[in-house]
Image (tube, rainbow, N blue to C red):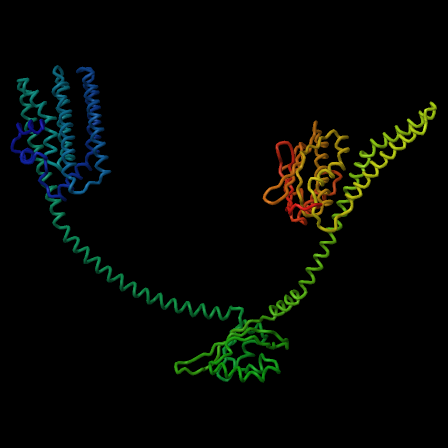
Length: 639
């Protein structure tokens, strides 16, 4: 409250000082709306005032540079800029808050304090930066302060005390300073400055009074303007209502006209025959679709009776009854009839008939819509015939598919036969070598006179044992090629053992290891030979992949276990896997990546497992392909 005390000492009767003394909170003596509008005008003019302050401060700093202490000049200019920035932030807060009239007093007080600090900062020029030794700079300072005081008339008169709070601290120190010089010229300048301030103060009061009166008149006339606007709005609303009613009526008339036009176009362009009959069953309307369906032009049909126009001879006897039902509104609204055309063709039409009733509830005619459904009836008849023979055709197709399946199975077995012949050769090579050795021993014994009965018995026994082993190999391969005709309960581990034994020699020859742990006894219901064929096919494919990719230390692993009531086989290898692009195609018939492959091995494997109620899937593992076979389990029964 120091600065108001100083102002009070200079100008104790000013209304601002009186109000500040009466109300320590500084409440303003404006009505709410008038006060809010004056505050808004003050903040609205603030950007111009800040721009003038910044420019003049820069100009003064430049002009006084070298005449007074440079640090003081810099400190003063920085103070002006910081204060201007603070006042600009205050403006932004005001705009953002969009205060209501009740908050105008707070924002007015903040504005007044910012103006007072601005005046003090400009007054500091005459206190600490006054150019005592340069009359030209003194005159420049006087012009600048006078210009600032004159410019403030345009930006600070909305709040009269704001102008006083600005010019007193800004200009009075300059006036006092030049009066203290005592020289006649300076005294004259001081007196002129005092007169200038007085005139500026009077001018600001007059501008404020004019502005205040203008705002008062605006507020007083607002109700009148509102009443006039309300009356005008009411009259305009009435006019709009009348115009809307007129437009609605015109729109309704236009809608009716367009509806009638659309109805006429619909009747003319519809693919349905639209016919209107009078009470005597004679044609009084005949649209283009009727011409197309029945062949009669409009001129040929008009006035003619239905019996002589579109009805075949055998149907004319029933016409009278149907017509009487329509006239009595008892039926006949929808029917399917045989009609005749101009060229004598018989067609089937679907009819929709509606009696036309006048205001006395008397039937004056009938409106009919007819559609030629001859093609549909014939199609339905053909469909019925097709459905009647569908079961037989399905049975024929299934028989053909079964025949194809048998051919594929035979092709698969023939394709596997070459592989099996090679396996037989590997299986027989060792016993044949052993048999040749037995014969050589007999010959040597004979030559060296060592052939006796005991030696001959031993040699004969060894030969028979080798021959029995070779015969067993033949039996094993023969069983492989003998398909199972009936479902049987078999041991899954035995199927794996038998399958491995058939190709073990071939794998040993290729130096490929077959890995499988001792498989527990798992009973499965299905076809054991066919399952063996699936396993042999997978093992053969794995061997071929390892050989083609040149994998050293190749191996194929077989695992079998139970899971959720199912027997699961996993056959994996380290042959490099299957490219992702064809991974889902390997079970398609005739799809192969081998140069000499038939493309039916994996397809037949899939069919065999599905016939046993199982599935087969493939994925790529860390080292190669992993095939998973899933087959339903049954109860454990003795084999």
